[in-house]
Image (cartoon, rainbow, N blue to C red; front, side, top):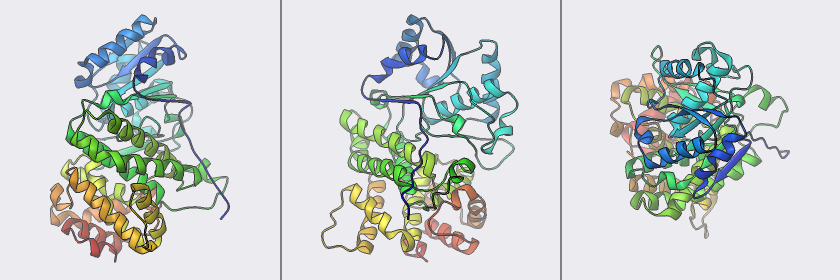
Length: 408
């Protein structure tokens, strides 16, 4: 196959301890009026107050919206953009977890183009550039600081919905691992497991021929030489440090690895896309109100087992990135060992091993399978194809904890 690569990223990515102090310099390049989207918890921290004070000292007028909610309810974006419209911001700064970053992206979109958020659901519905967004993550998981996607919850729909467009990519991402030190173990685990799932699904995604029209017609286009580089970097960093960060949140080296891993995973899946683990989590999350990262991580070993018949080489390479010894193991044995290591790691950080453990009742399994199969942008990215009976078997296997049944 001809070498092919594609990547879409922010104009500027800054990573490292103390990089949050660069925010005023970065912001000044985009104007003098900044809308900040954050949540109530982070707005009360010394770190946030310090960043706002630094922006003001640099001559930037600030309007703070600190009412971002988890999963970004659709109508809260309209409220935020409505409040900020008379302020006329030159930029939007998202500071917080993935929901705060998605709130910033969506608000920047509505401030630039107007209309209702639902006008932009799907791929390539954004007509042009939004206001510049500066993304400052305080958790290490979603990768939203570098991706072209924002996910919101719509009260008129059962499942969460996404807006996917290169115009949603932040102009700048400022990633300071010091901001993640205060994350509790549970959030560290869920966010980090989300990032590892992003990386693994991006690396094992379907590989398509490098048709020049492919990236112009689709946001998620499958794996390529460039996304593979970032996916394996993410696996390596998260594999060696996620458990350490969970056990000891003050371990600065582990925190840096996990945040860089989440960033690299975002760089990978923002173009390659994710696949079946994410597709199943959408309906599971709607029924169980399970945190997104927890749901996708619960599904991942089962999806990897399902895909192993067509992606054993990629799964074995993931194992090498995780630090497993190849020795005399063949590809199939290495792939099996890789899936077992993912199960071990997730168990060690408290990830539920089954869908039943997430609270999904057995009478909703067929509905979950039907809904998951309908999320075409994710299912078409999976390396092994699905029909409805196959999806039902996968969901049933993940509910019962029968890993062997997931391979059928």
